[in-house]
Amino acid sequence: MLNIDMRKIYNFYPIEPRPDPAALPTGGDVYYECLDCQVVVNSVPHIKAACACGNLQGGGGSLAVKDPARVRVVKGKLK
Image (tube, rainbow, N blue to C red):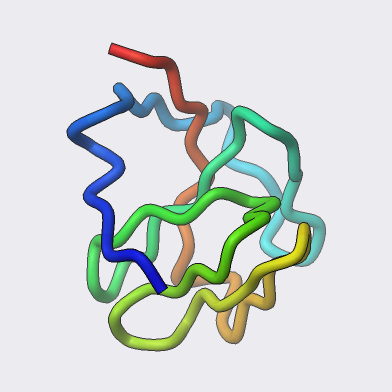
């Protein structure tokens, strides 16, 4: 698993209004920021990806979120 700081590549902007934790949006430019460890993970990761605390884990185009209430949904734009 690669530990890449996504903030070095992208600028992130919160999606407003805040999405319902029970129905988090996904997409190529949609990312989830874990509020516990501050790691940003793509909502549809094609390579193995996880946050440091384990709240976000995925790969192969799907992501598992243990506690959706502890996630901020953001859009990413290349710097």
